[in-house]
Length: 110
Image (cartoon, rainbow, N blue to C red):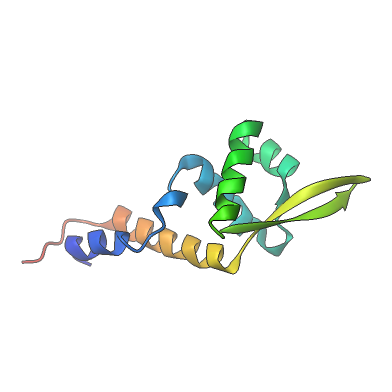
């Protein structure tokens, strides 16, 4: 892949998911699959402060990358988060681009 193509492909990525917090959240939900995770599980596993985690979950939900549903666990009603199909596609697109970007070795248009 030549550098210009690599840069052009970046235009098709959702720039709003490229923050460390959002990458951690999306990667975790991708890895966990359809079971997803509760707020409490994400908070404990990722070590993201409550407010930062909450605001980023809501932003990702608004973008259509994740969805949430109420679940009962240990007698409590909790919010569980899952990657949407759109989120899954966007994550795979982003990962492919990042791999190509990191593996770029200086090919040019020459």
